[in-house]
Image 1 (cartoon, one colour):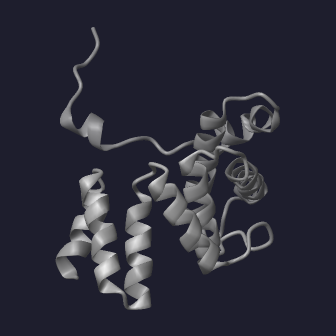
Image 2: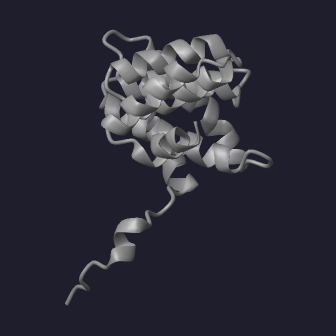
Length: 163
């Protein structure tokens, strides 16, 4: 007999295992693999890498530049998946893998804008935050409102309430 799902089953998701990500590396590097699957792999690697920023696992230190390279290549394709463009913007805005993707807030802003307009609506929050940093609260508010309109209320609504 299987247990019925509870509310907590829907709230928590397991973190990806570093060993599983490392085992999938040959598939990620193989040509012809599903691009959305590769993006998800990159997202998982970079999420764990970011969580362990101060002392990343040696395996993550090996995987993170690969993920950054895959994101760079994918974002350069035409048409590029909006999530890949967004992830490139994250890497450019944080400079978390500077040997692969240097810190470049100007390019990050352009990437967030392209990702948001391309349908990756989480990027509206990043744009709004950047406009706030530039002192353009009207544009920031417009971006947060667009994020709310497209379902990113958890981030955009909070920021919208305080602006």
